[in-house]
Picture 1 (spheres, rainbow, N blue to C red):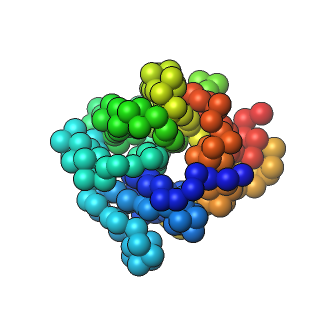
Picture 2 (cartoon, rainbow, N blue to C red):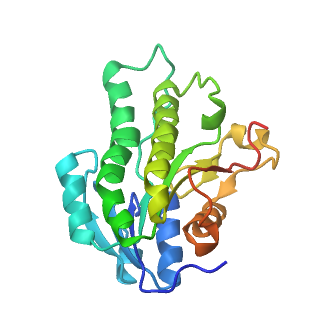
Length: 233
């Protein structure tokens, strides 16, 4: 697998922690320039290696536009931002439901709407979003009604973006994550229910992301690639 030769530039929204930070580190290892963006969290180690951090609440259209304008030109857009709330349907509030849509769907909408045109104009680009391992099956999510609904809508948005951008050399794909153990999220008992009987690692997600960012993945578009250890099969 070969990533495009540097200098390439990736904008990683939500790139200071977890999976986003892992992808950012791997791209820096491979000679890419990386712009990290987020509402609050910074990544001193990544910044020390040359990553540029910009504060941005991408759910606000003006802030999303300012980020992408300042970062231009870029070759990849990785939308790893999003909040998570574990509340049942009758415990969820209207405010909580709206917050999940805002953080997981509206962020992606603004970034795709604003970020795809410059990628399409240059004739090459890679975009990644992140969904759940159960999204494509539309399984009920009794403990995640708001989060799961936002991710299902995100998959539809991702595929629409792929259709619009595909003729211009740009791919837009989703990674459907299972139970991934990160520095701020431990695995729970459900991680053992997948075919692999364990939680996944950030590096296993990074490997899939690097493939979708590579030239070898140029004919994979509008896909949702499960990185879930076979959860739900």
